[in-house]
Image 1 (cartoon, rainbow, N blue to C red):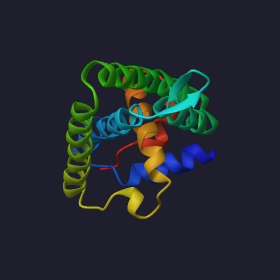
Image 2: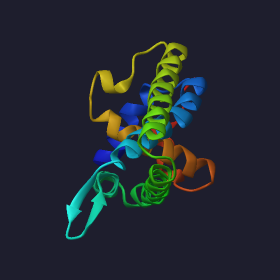
Image 3: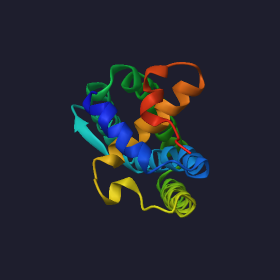
Length: 163
């Protein structure tokens, strides 16, 4: 097993209940988008222009995901580019105050969904035992999505729900 598969298997043991998995399908992307929204408010000056921090943090996360698994990492790259592009548009169109409001709604809402899911699960979140699992969570959701689409069936044994 690769490092990614071992981490995915660990994460999966904390997410056996289908209701918990469902809440994570909404909560994890909401949290990621909220963070990228806020990061889009700040630009690192480069010459006459600046590069939004959201692009830098997004690129670093994608590089980490690709290092763990090229296929999942590539799929995550597509999602992150879309989220950063949306974040940039939102900040440009609506400004600082609405961005902070949307951040709050998505961030708090995403975490509430995560916690509700773990009430269904009857087990605390994986990141409570290993903070690295917060980095694996988005990959878990992407792996689940790709498996639903008939792709990445090689990961099925790692994430199967055992009754």
